[in-house]
Image (cartoon, rainbow, N blue to C red; front, side, top):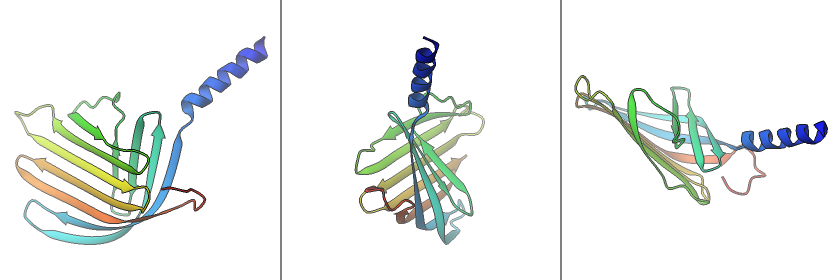
Length: 156
């Protein structure tokens, strides 16, 4: 009986922990526009990691200059921002956006908009991050292509 209970516990815990992790290697052209209209352009290689768990998705872009994460895990609490997350992902694309507003509007209003799109058939990646503090806008736009880090995967 103990073996059956132990086997059942192991089976349940592996199903809860099990998740799909997909890694992509991407070449991304990035345009940064500061609040003073200073434009800088970069071409960076990035590692994109997509973690899927049930109906939740987290996508992290790791580049030499920074790390950028967007996720639709609705049960996480953020003490500084109220999030409005839209996930239009399906079997052909990952498409997540997060519009966050600071909870304390009166003192220092802050808005942070993140949007990420990856075509799972072609590997095209598009992202946007717009950060607004007291009316000053800083924007980052990226466009590029990704390759599968595991060529045995049929789709991205």
